Amino acid sequence: MPSLVVIGSQWGDEGKGKIVDFLADEAHVVVRFQGGPNAGHSVKIGEKLFALHHLPSGILRPSKISVIGNGVVIDPGVLLKEIDDLKSRNVSVRNLRISDRAHVIMPYHRLLDGAEERLRRGAKVGTTGRGIGPSYADKAARLGIRMGDLIDESALAEKVDFLIPLKQRILNAYGDPSRLDKDAIAREYSGYGNRLSEFVTDTGVLVRNALSKGKRVLFEGAQGSMLDIDHGTYPYVTSSTTVAGNAASGSGVSPLLLDEVYGVVKAYTTRVGEGPFVTELRDDIGRNIAEKGGEFGTTTGRPRRCGWLDLVVTRYANSLNGFTGIAMTKIDVLGGLDELKVCTHYLLNGKKIRTIPADLRALANYEPSYRKMRGWDELEPKRFERVLSKGFSALPEEMKQYVRFVEKEMKLPVVVLGLGRRRNEILDLRKRRWAHC
Image 1 (cartoon, rainbow, N blue to C red):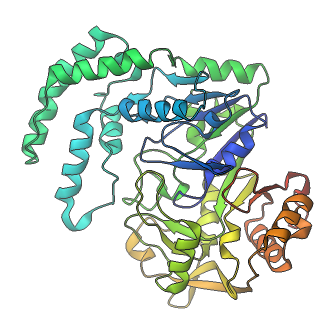
Image 2: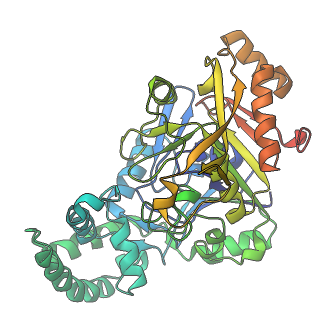
Image 3: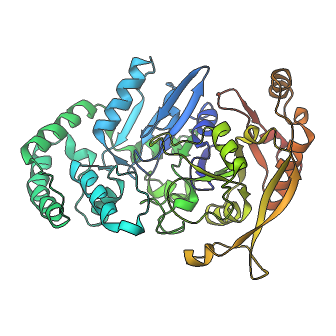
């Protein structure tokens, strides 16, 4: 490490949770620095599947300090359910720490999220309805409630007294019939504060101190670069900054302390919700990939749209994040296909396009230009075990060619290769760095 940022290079759902869980074994501290319960990471340990929403994937390694940073927005009721679920499964959360500066998702945020999406009619962006956008909007408008407020009854009461009548008027204007009960909300959220108070602290100090002592810190991003509020496919994006630069701001550390950035690249492309998707497959191949890859949202359960790997997207993500290595996931899902395709650039009236435009109307008119590659047979159990034992050299030649092609196009080494959902189904290729670029 000593400090490493893990970022999604596509539209999220790249398998970051598995990669972070793997890398967390070497870390002392794991920090989630943005997003809310609209983002989910899943990790399979043996036959047990853990679905995480707020909590960093490092929580599944109880000896590590797991931090929810100031850049995250928190639904305390959902977080407590998540904590209780882990406890019921004998996973300790004693090393969890929550920033006192993290903003809180309130009941009116969820109501406003749904009302605003309904009012968009034909221009919906596909929000999860969990209140994340309105919570970030209040943060920017300086109307937010923070975790530190939940453990201070007088501070919470003062803010609720002001905010509830204001939000009620907005809901009324939106035509939403919901009624906000100021006293009930204050009691409910004060109760959340009481239960969570043991975890709430100044996590910026904690992380800075860890780095100053030479501790290894892993910064875990949620969603993906193409969902970034500034640089993604706006308006079909999330409400936070998802790129590596926010690892510093969302955790309270200097950007000079960030050493490496791994971009997580799914071996194909998926996205959830609305928005243009140049390499989308609307045929049996796409449906086969979705079924085989289990392409349903960890948090929402929504089906993901599937398509061929789009290197225009991943190169763009690299330009935003400055990746030092690639963690490729789900390459096993492509096994059994006779032919694979990788998009190297777009075409518009015969002209090559290698960038992502701000105007999505232009993107909708681009056609993908593909490099065709031979597929490989699915790995039989015996060969799969041999691959896990012997490493990269034991992979099918066509799979190795696929990896090498991505490395060449991205000008980056694949440092981690995910071959399945379970924790141990992964190859550490860091010693092989740059060997085939």
